[in-house]
Length: 455
Image 1 (spheres, rainbow, N blue to C red):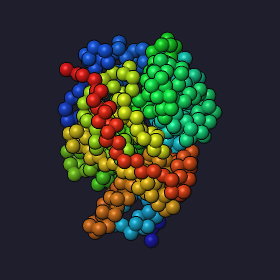
Image 2 (cartoon, one colour):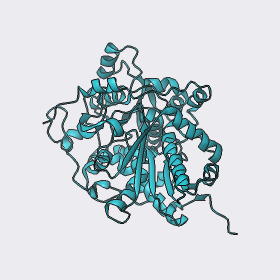
Image 3 (cartoon, helix red, strand yellow):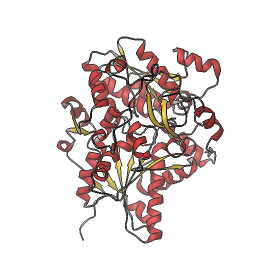
Image 4 (cartoon, helix red, strand yellow):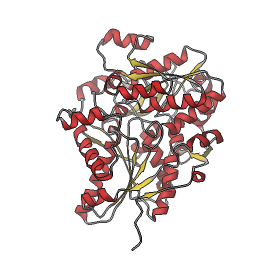
């Protein structure tokens, strides 16, 4: 009997030469991005204080393929192509006829998918002569990735880390410092935005929205500094499509095509990175029955409970207005361990696809997600990041549904990063102290009352 492969590996020459741009295939034109002051559509000049021109071009481009610079592809070789695994042991544990595949992005030096865009952003900023990048981070995955990328290109890096994660994940902080970054707990007294929040809530645990405000202010007030964002914006999701482009080749190697593609969503970058190259197949009619499932926390359920409208990407209101699913820019989510999913909004392109019912969404409680993470770790050996546990929960549920229906189902999900620096969360789980935060309806309703007025 021929051996059944567990992993599907590509060669370095198979690293994609182009990123895939979903804007070329959206069912309808994306809503315009609006200036935070005037409410009018923004132009390149409005973004120039924050981003290099090449990233601004990518943000608005409708070209289906965008070339990946040679220097970026060369650095990608440090960890790309990433492996695709068939989760055969998990399948046996679940006694399911489903075939479960996962694309594993935890093999990058920073331990997640985030370097796919961090390296590209650092490259373009270096080309434009920047000396420093300022950013925010929730769980620390993005901050670690940008610190790595800045070190590779000789750039300084300042990271505003959400305070609750700064306290929960000290080794993420150490990792960023090892790569050469300055890490500041947010809200801080370094910026007007941080001081404003601290003046109103001295014990604020922070949020991604607050940390974004601080990083944007830092970049906008220093001529040698640009801002770098780890999710939400089109150019960020564009860079992540190397995941899905590789996965399509690997699924061909396995002789299968997914029935459902799953990923967790905070801002949307790792979900889009895997899913968007497959979404194209659905939009073009090549795979009309293909399903997509975006998973999120029940305590911060933007796609399942949010309002589809214009809102700021940050708490203070410094960023442009984008149309997205939002819980309100002033909303501060509960202190769940999946820090990368504690964001009040979502990527505009992802929001549009959910609104147009191309993509489904589901929300899960914290304990149910960790149940899935532990079951996965014991079967497959990889300890997942808390964020990715939401995708694993959905994949296991899909496999169990296939068992109940007695049907074959091919499931593909993105394991966006490992949880090696998140063991405090697992300690809380095993001690029975992992709290299931309910949907904070009253706080969301209050935040939604403060949405910007857009004509």
